[in-house]
Image 1: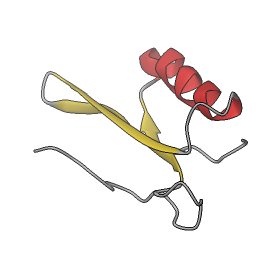
Image 2 (image 1 turned 180 degrees about the horizontal axis):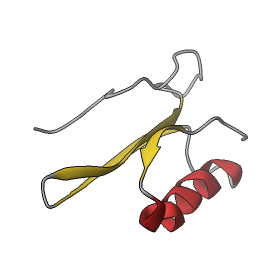
Image 3 (image 1 turned 90 degrees about the vertical axis):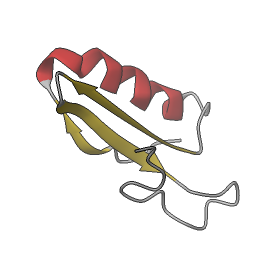
Length: 67
């Protein structure tokens, strides 16, 4: 499934973004998000796909975030 990857990713974490996108291309994900902080700074904050298996609700910004 081809989806638009939303969010931000520092250049040194591009490989993580590529793997994240590949999971959708290989139909391993319907919807997902990933956030990484380093030294108190958010360096990756990505989301894509859908929030449900029926693919009727887009996966939104901060769909689920543990504080």
